[in-house]
Image 1 (cartoon, helix red, strand yellow):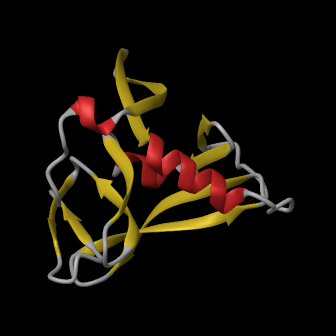
Image 2 (cartoon, rainbow, N blue to C red; image 1 turned 180 degrees about the vertical axis):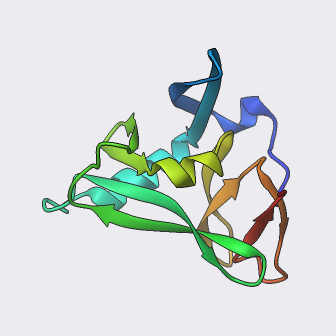
Length: 137
């Protein structure tokens, strides 16, 4: 996992802060999406009239246990959490959301490749190729 640049350099916008209730006390859970990631997500949805959003999910996969999956969404489910951003929506299912609390979704472009970067405080390790991650039990 990469270290985050200073907040002033990130220029990210917190899209939505979702509150859930647990044992009668409010717990704040959130996903932040940087401006660069918002632009890339909006571009991915551009012209896709059959799709209403992009879904970010955590699936069991890889040698470390979990991986991130992004896909187009035709319909938002009742238990999805939705983040609105200029040009689109990002949805996360209830189970994935538990492993994404505090995530900062970024998009980077360097001379060799472009990619989304998932800065996830819940991730405790990753595999050698960086395609999957683990969480504390």
